[in-house]
Length: 130
Image (tube, rainbow, N blue to C red; front, top):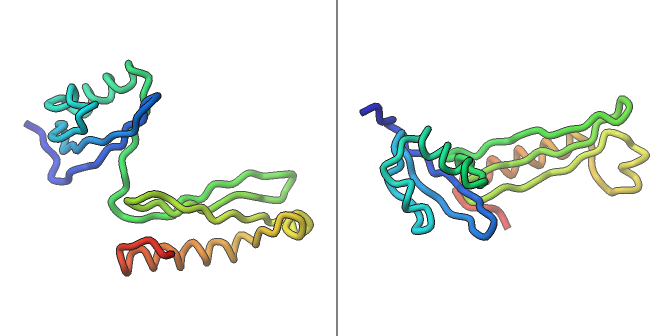
């Protein structure tokens, strides 16, 4: 058997449920609605989930920052997404000063600093700040 030394928690979203399972290359434990996956390899589970029309994603075990942006004629607007095991939080920015004055959003640099501070607090305490 080709088992990984690390266990991934996978989040599955269907039309009327959100559930999870644990896999180390083979599905070891699963929520009751996903019990058919137990014993399947990751590839088999992926094919099963796709055939059902569900979506799946690995829940990150370490918090991280993802950058999402769009270019509006030379001016960027976007967000920094802090992902962690209990969810995610977005920090929105706009590089156009005129739009910022209307929307109340901060600059990219300011929001990145806020995202970094939030990430450090998550890593330091293990809890989401209030």
